[in-house]
Image 1 (cartoon, rainbow, N blue to C red):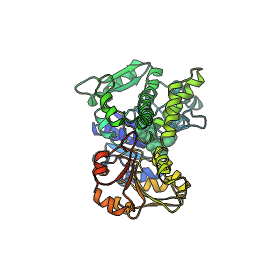
Image 2 (image 1 turned 90 degrees about the horizontal axis):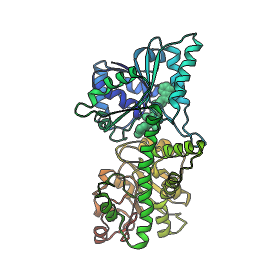
Image 3 (image 1 turned 45 degrees about the vertical axis):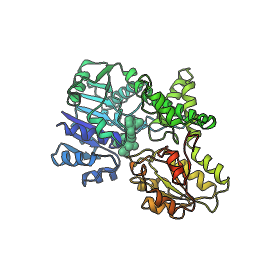
Image 4 (image 1 turned 45 degrees about the horizontal axis):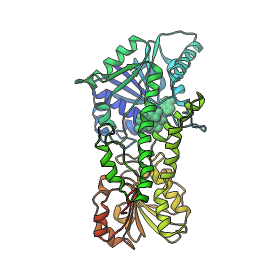
Length: 442
Ligand code: NAD
């Protein structure tokens, strides 16, 4: 099948690459010339495990192409995926300018039937706006043409995006015409050979499903973070509690980790956008309002613990910070809790020496201009002479580090662990002062 993917970010590039892996001919379009240049030179502009290999293989086979040329891209695909960003607007709503610009471009250049597929996360009612934008662009050319609009929200997780795309647990397709559904089913059949995972529904339900999923996951995280605050006070260990409740199949084990709050490009903006949609429709989403405020407070939990230990004035202190990306296996720094932690420490006069296995370039870019933070090349370099170690992201390489080396490198053996990676009793036995999240003994 001939497919065009508009937007070569985490979603667009992975989608395009995985579709080309199944034999489709895919053209990826982006307005960012830098990204397209990197891709055309055989590079990958983002960090995503397994992606480079698939891109290289399919580009070499001529099934995956990259362009900034709108006309070529629109002409190519019968199916046109829109996978551009939908950042939060000032009022918290999803900013649809990129989605609608992509839709207008399709209307301006299409010459035959297209299935226009919203893969970006967009509020209920966006499919109708996309349809209007395409119709209007066609009308400006004095044309009417047949096309379908489909909602196909993306559920991939950064850090495991290729795996999620190749083996989806469900594929949600919102549509109101059979022709489009038939084409979507044909496109996705190779990804669900053993089980039919296609959930066909109406357009508003498909659009809503994506927000509902992210809101539920964010709720679980804020719920555990809130309980972790109480656990500390009453002498319970949130890690034991997590295992105790997660073993109930009605609850399950996923997304029950207390930590430094959720971040990334999706949960914060999607929770905000859903609250906004509620408000617009006269429905106050009180649970989600609480989810958001608990999260805002939780991003500062490590700083609160550091201040409780050293006082408000942190001048003259240096903290080694391990982990900058908002979660492991990605270089994405959007809404990363590390940014709040670094800024709060610097604001109190501290210095920070930060290390991340892959997000260093992104971190340098988003924290440009901040005085007092040094980006260093290794875990050990971050530690040398620091007052304490602060763990913010749960990269695997931080899980069983050289504790003797940490102790020797720090001024005093103090660890603030925002991800509950270590056993408090073991840390105590090694002579560490260990502060974690929701753990009475730490
Ligand atoms: P991203 O910022 O990584 O990529 C978006 C890309 O779109 C950029 O490269 C940008 O240059 C390009 N773009 C913008 N306007 C364009 C236009 N008119 N024509 C062509 N290209 C254009 O974003 P992302 O993280 O891939 O997210 C995309 C959408 O998918 C968002 O709505 C997001 O909420 C949703 N989503 C993201 C994830 C995730 O984990 N990142 C998961 C599921 C859904």
